[in-house]
Image 1 (tube, one colour):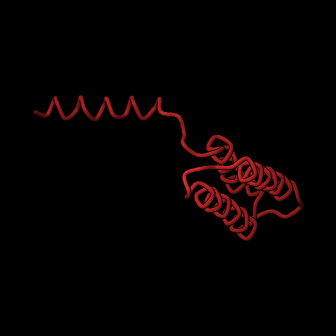
Image 2: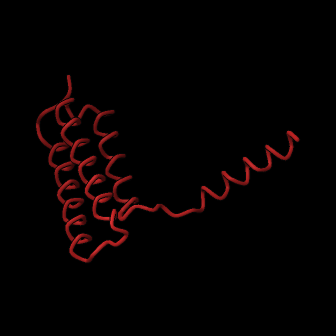
Length: 103
């Protein structure tokens, strides 16, 4: 019985590793989260900057959910989300490279 449970869990983990992300730009969002975390770790981002960037990322995720809520993502919705992701990426770069650092 234990062996069956362990096999099922391992199989589930293997399957989960190969399932592609379901978000519009899940890879891009993930990379942006990593960039924010790296900025916090190195002190390039202040607490306020981090909170602002995290809120921006959360808004994008909410907008994506709302756009998909009717079961269809129109080209206009996709373009708007891509534009938001691009702006967020630019904002992360700007905040990491300004002269403010966490003390």
